[in-house]
Amino acid sequence: MADRGETQRERARRLRVAGDTDAPARERPRPDYMEPAIEIETPEPEAVEIEVAPAEPELEPGLEQEPELEPEPAPEPPRRRPRIPPPPPPRRRRRMRNPVGFAPALGGGIARGLDLPAALDAAAVLLPGPGRETAERIAGRLRGDYDQDEWGYDEELVKLVRPFFEFMYERWWRVDAVGVERVPAVGPTMIVANHAGVLPWDATMMNVAIVMHHPQPRQPRFMVLDWAFRLPWVSSFMRRVGGVVASPYNAIRLLDQGHLVMVFPEGAKGAGKPFSARYRLQRFGRGGFVEIALRTGASIVPVAVVGSEEIYPKLGESRLLARLLGAPYFPITPTFPALGALGAVPLPSKWRIEFCPPIDLSGYGPQAAEDRTVVFELSEQVRDTIQQALLDNLVKRGSAFI
Image (tube, rainbow, N blue to C red; front, side, top):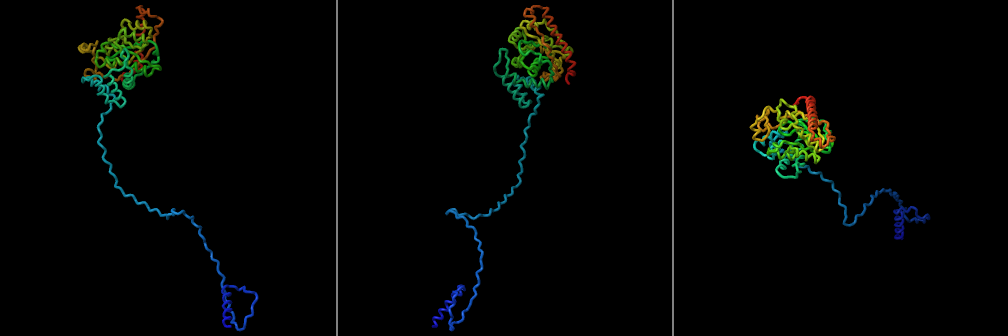
């Protein structure tokens, strides 16, 4: 009996421990011999909140994510010592550019016995870059043979020397040209002008005026006394830039070809007149230029050049030197022969050139060239036109050098 009671007590204890308080509603009678049951209060379990972190995505095998490392601070660059710049190289002494001294240097080279190409090379160092290159190219062309027309004219050489002539025109002589548009653009035309100086600078400046200011420029050819072509360092250059030996035959051929021709009827007497007789025209000979114009049907354009009389002021002449050179005269000026070859540099006078209205001779016909009266009257008309224009432009120019 004792074992049976003990078994019941054990069963009741288990039910109470499990919290089965809702035991069967039907209570069994408890025997007297059984010990009173011990009631045990079981506390209710507290609710515990558990935070569930989101699951990390699973990585494929072999792609395990490496832990992120904090970037290490960049090491400070090593401090450099301040670099001391090397001393600048010594400057080479350059020869000063002096465009104004180009002409004296050219004359000095010729005086030392150099030919014209060698003298150009020696004087070219005084010019700025473009001018120096041009002078060297000219010197190179003067040493060789190049394409020329039947008169020796070299168009490429003329383009090369044009910057130098334009410098003389704009800077050295400060030429003021008026009436350039009066020169006919086509057809045989004769320009008749006064003349002064040993070298044909007046023809060169008229040429530059036409090329620079005419609406339809054309290259003129100018007549030069034959003795100038005997000078070894001038003849070749003069022929290549448009100079032609002065003769009626050459003038007629050029006009028949439709060229623009410059003539100077005063001849050697006009170029060699003393400074006291400046701007007073000499006799125009027998009017040979009018005969040529009548035979070829060319129009005549009178031109007055003011300024050329002052570039070589003639104080006297040396007959001995003129005889040695075969020249009609050899002038003595304030700078020559006192300054030697430098005396050949023309003085920087102020120039003014006027192209007068052309004289149309088409109404006379070629047969009028045999009429001496017509020839003389036309010659005097041209001479009077030039003389009056010289006097007018002398007043308009003002001072000769300022």
